[in-house]
Image (cartoon, rainbow, N blue to C red; front, side, top):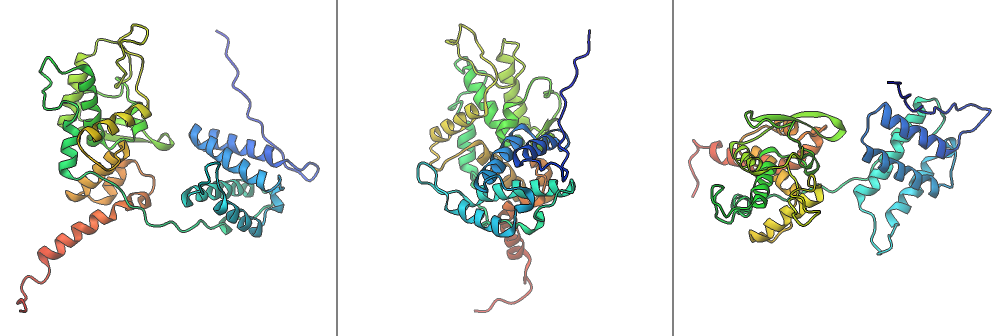
Length: 333
């Protein structure tokens, strides 16, 4: 069988004889992100959008023409930008534009292309993030909602109910991102084991653990299946082409499922799969897990991301203080 040659990645030679256009440099940089930095397709597309927006605003300025004053003016433009609905741009979105530009300038510097030093670009200060999570009664109501008081052995429990119960149990048991859950297949998970490996952001592998409840309900669901679809969670729409299954669920489908059962459970605040992920992390920290371990279980590249949960550890510190501080002192009054 003849070998198919791999596509060639074009490299631009930047010399004094020919000034490479900004669009060419961006294309070369995106190839670098994809091939050498192994960035995801989504990241490459986002950086493409952010960079081309900057250079459209800057009228295709050459790298050496990019100055700190130009970046300041661009930041003002981003801050005042309004979309067709008259909505402004969030601070974190503005920062994503600057992160992409800073990374691009760093790449140019590595190639000895004269431009603004990337470290001169500072990001906007972000307000401290707060996370929404389920308290214990809300969590129990959510997890119970798909079966509505029935048991797996009951004949009236449908395969959809079993699937949705398994989805909710897996989300809380593993702390998976919704995209990671949607990407699970039968080859990854062995129900005889309490753990499996998943590849998260940046295609980085991490170990994920399943609780006894999650394994039990996942087994109930898979045992009811009669198809050969590799995806763990699939749609069961008999009206679609007369087939029992129509492929794996999308992240959006799983999100709608979670929202549906949150409403059915009488939870008034907006609940998403990421809310269940926050609840997973909160549960671990409240029960004594250290933040470094939670970072690893969540698959966060930086501890800074995990520190959004410090308010939980602060609560535990308050409990420790109240339990152990000044116990031998006499009380005034």
